[in-house]
Length: 375
Image (cartoon, rainbow, N blue to C red; front, side, top):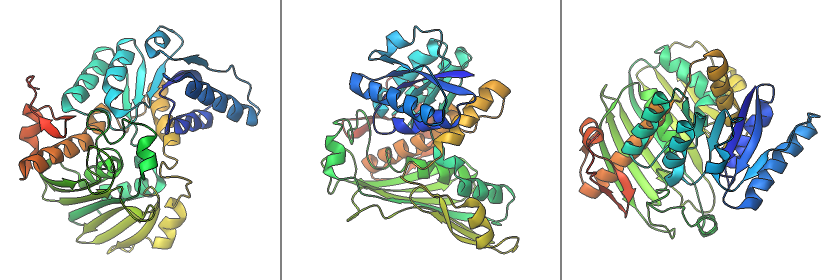
């Protein structure tokens, strides 16, 4: 049995509670923390009520407003961090230095320097670092991944990741850090990063060149509300990204498309949870077959992937199962986006490998700044 704590009890935190409730045989929530006490109390009560609904008696989690105080507890094995993005690195590093395993929401950090520090601290303290790219665990995505690994596409030449959503002014006014360069980033870093992660995962190669174009057209935020990226990977595959929060009147699509010489697949739905197109030259299966196995009904864009993601982390700690999204995997999509910011600033494509080795792309003051510390 692993004891979990949650830091940050806002919008996404209920998914972490849901994941713990659904993994109750090997995990339990023992502490919650938020600078607003009422939010922490609400999440603790939510966990207790959901467990009681399954006729499982538990001790209500301890409530904290100071995570540093919470970290003094020897009871906690794993900390889940669901705060604003700009605080992920600082909190994760303190948790890992205190000997706690960490699950951190995306993006893991807002600079390559912070991401590398997080990975280094996890290794120095022999604790695990996992990043919440829960869409990797969607049944449709897992089936797609198997098709990629079996080389059923022939030669993949293009991948398209589109996130066409809407986030109104009320969304941003609920939390003043949203849409800021200091704590969040724009529609690419916040909303599109999941699909960018899937795109680079399926590409099977490191990025080589990145071209980014971004703009702010409608929302009252510092960062972009519409952005595009072109990514040329080392193996020649071209990735195309389009993301926005301006769609009228509501969310339109989140789709991942793979184009190969011998196969075409489109996965869509609220959170890349439904197989829309499935055509392969080998004819091994039909779209009806894979839809039956892979299509998943969900109630929000967050999907249901936190449950198997937690299961993977639990099995890794207890049984040495391979960790699917560790720190190295978790930083890849973030690096692509930060290179896109640099490209947009410089008005030209940038070399990925050179940039990530020499720059810390700290997202701050609407530009990418060169760090005095070289990685």
